[in-house]
Length: 499
Image 1 (cartoon, rainbow, N blue to C red):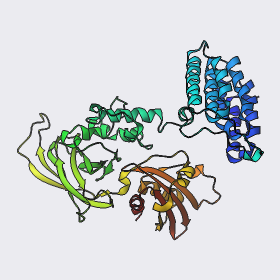
Image 2: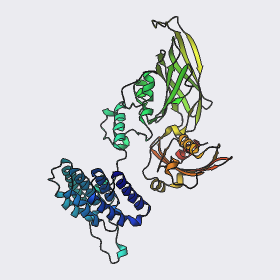
Image 3: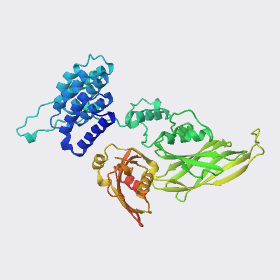
Image 4: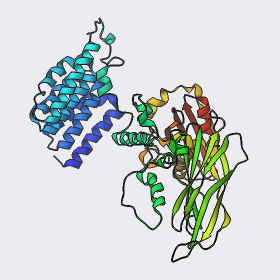
């Protein structure tokens, strides 16, 4: 009895129970099997079938549940049949001892009237046959029950690779990554095989509104663009031949404001990170009526000349009233191995030309002008792509602690919400397991919180961080952080973001 929402809640509750108390997996799966026998909702049935396939390897006898799933192939509509075929294929991949029996059942669907069901069965039979030929299952000979080895696929098993290993990224991110790869100058001229590792990284936090910021600013304020396509910020770098020769952009930061929004000239900066260079794109918006600004550049100065070297500028030709132009400054990293936070003082230099309000023609030759901007910080967090791992605990335990960096800090008095968001922003990493929001954490103490973060540093270094926050009224927030990666220098660089 009950509607869709009620039944979905029941299924989700059973799944939560199996995750929290694995000993209940066997009885819980039997309840789910009985549930799909009488479920009238196609979407909920397919959802439950996939859940059974995911958890069946947790029980001692997975073969007990095959008949419940195969009954769906015989009795249900095409959508559920296709889901049942996929579930049987996954069970066969996870349990090598059952592959021969499941392959026999799958062959019955090779002539199914539904294209999707027939194709899934055909692929599964082909994959399982090849997997069994490469790694034949040998029944273990044991004398004691305790000596029975687990029924697990061998390392490098073909069926396990296809059905059990998830894609490194979602299909949406894969599409965007391939488009970014195609737009990289010279990428399509090579003959090397395209692999996931060769594709550009697409960050988990790259929302469309952030990616479209550059496009919206270029259109000009007061106007709307009907194009809803996601725009890659690195495309502005690739469009200039001198900058395109520097190589592929690893990541692009969100625009950082260097002025107030109400000032005469609104300036934002996007930091494009490359292997050996940093390209600073300054988005300069002219809000002064009857004025055109020409030959616009941003002059940078820093007291630390050991980390970055300014090697060139690409000035913005002009910006009329209400328009936004882009100027570029190229920095070369003197020491690639060591990355530290560096602050630059910025000054906008340009030629101001008065124009006629009606005709738009210049009135005179113009005059040189300077406009002081706020300081620009380049931090190791700018070199960090926000990539969330699916299982933080497993990833943390699987990372060697020999390169671990530990730190203990005191932050200014803040609420726990503000402290969590501040740490995420400072480190530039992605929160995992729902720890980025307090509402998703079952904590009895609102003054304490454990934050799990992950990301990928320039050079392909996987980085994990565990952050414990403890709010002390009147004293500030106590912050304990542990950072792990495959390179001690990277761990130290991430830790320096807090300093």
